[in-house]
Length: 393
Image (cartoon, rainbow, N blue to C red; front, side, top):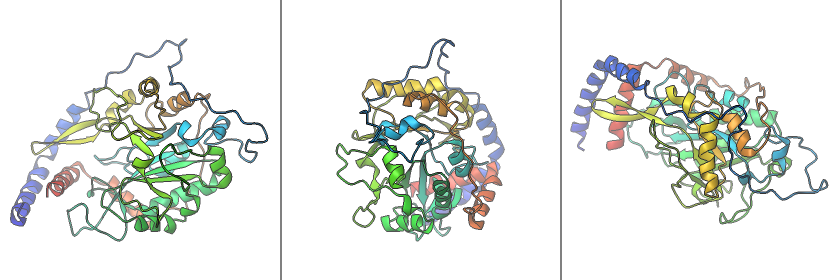
């Protein structure tokens, strides 16, 4: 597309977007009446069905860890290998607040304290001088689709929350999935972890991904290597051994599930030891005759039910696949934590903890978060148009 045409289209789109914002709000309001069918709730005497947890070899008392009484809130999990544990996980963990592109109601500090142990972060170039993705930049920012649409600040700022949390809670194991949208180098990503002081907790796989034997949570706690980091592109294990290519170790179920669709357990890539079970839906937002996918907060109460999550886990279990990362939008709505306890076959207890994050907060991150809350729907419509154009160019 020629530059002149792009500019003309962008100018026209801006004018139209601002003019139709009210109409689009009405469309969005109508969309919220759509609901995912709620599965039949089991009678009080019935317990939700759960997939069979693979047998964990018994260990003697001498082999058991003595310094960790619990791992991620449960003593039973300390002797289980990481690939035999289910973790509550948030999709686009950073994308929270009053924004049309937000996938979560609460920010990462609250997620950590509430019991979320798997996180998905999208890395983008925040430069305002270009609309193009795949551009180079010196520092990754956390943005959803485009930094024009939702910008949660530098990656290193958010990683400080993880550092503070892991320092305060020595028996917690966390995994982070990085979507490297703008092709940052492994060393650039690693620098953000180092700047946040988080690299001291990373776990480095010691062998080939094929049939890789993961440590138990207790072993990770004992060695204080309690952070697994996976990236979807530009891994370089020679330079950064702990930043591993996600497709070598994990596989995902489809993440483009529309409102009213059925959750299955088909795999997007070749099977791997770790399974990311995506359990969230999107709805369509009409912008200038274009259908744009957006998160669906109004269906979270039916999508995030205990039975709905366990039912999908059962589908995976029937295919001999244990779901490790139970990934949802708007995690605080519904019964994610109870469903994960069912999958792990442990008696549910609240995973909530309390952490003082004051030392991790920074002015730059606070400013970014404040600007998100102030975003209007008109701005969001404009941002969607700009983002759509950027993807087409």
